[in-house]
Image 1 (cartoon, rainbow, N blue to C red):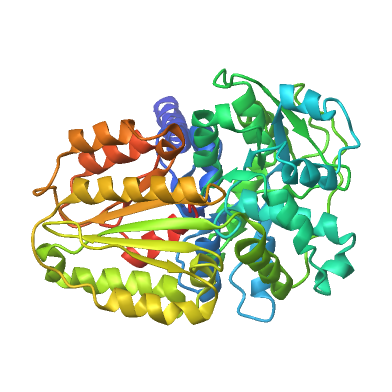
Image 2 (cartoon, rainbow, N blue to C red):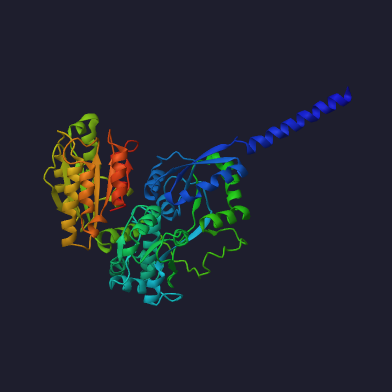
Length: 522
């Protein structure tokens, strides 16, 4: 009897242990929600490994870095964690205010550098040259010898990090930069060579592949540049340039927003910093380890990384970003093709459209609103459509004094009639091609907002036929369609794919949020 009792007790212990093991490895887990920048999407294949070793399932919701920063600072965010490529701007915004971030741990490293086609690097004398400076790069760009891509600093961390680094290098010292000595001429010289922009580093890399015949390089994360160069998608591999004055390195901190999840956060970061995971991370994403003693992957250059100082005030950072938007970058010409058919009169759709556009015309004073507003030197074209294409309206933004006229035009938009999507888009491309020929230095883009399917005017095939007949340069003008109401996702995705643009979904987000996000691509 005693043997049977002992055996039964042993079985209970074993069963309990078996259940405990099963609980960790067979699906039992704690879920942590993550407000994430799009730059960490490539980590998703490792989430299963993280869950297996920690019992923690990560559930990311992707957002633009500046938008996510705004949500955290305002106290509107309810995620457990946040994960961006860096949190320096967020740290500054939090100073003196409520504590929103309870802990942060750097997880990996990737400097923001310039990748140049090897043939171009040899032509410019930069191949294998450790003494190339940001001034050298700016001189080549100003002379038309370097045409590059970079994300919009007002919406993407890679562009933001690059811009702040360049401004710091040109200023010569952190004190000079913080005292307001921004070398606008140097920035203007450098960004004279920027020929492609985007709202995310991933989209920029894809767009670079499509446009590589007319570009010489790209500013992006080291990891993105190395991965792209090794992908087999490039006609000319990239040589990475680490300017002598220095760069700013993204350290991808994992931020604890929900302090009640601290135990899970500590367990998670302990594993993420382990040597085994750091090796996996480096192998799969080509980011550098933060844990000492982890040997560097041979694919990563052993360049001397000189870290530039980051500004110490929000005022300085804002001044740098606005110097870029209003003075340094090539000016934009954005065309908005707007559905004002009868269905826009229902469910306050026209009200939401007007609210979104009025926000861009100076009424949105949030961080994201100020950065995404219409900028000085920018030209705007509005093409409303219903059963037919209505007369276009053009504006040039010279400053905030230009906003009232834009808002007055927006206020007069009135819904009624059917939906001639492709006739309006066809006219938008014809006008943009003419404008581009007259002023080729500008960025040209088209935003298409519709809440229904095409039921008037020409069809999709006719539009695409006309589009393909445009000059090659005009065909590089991208359309960014907005999915709204009962619009056809397949039809709008077809337009985005054909023109190299991106489809945005306003059925699960406000039109104001979508229009601000699109501004990163203009």
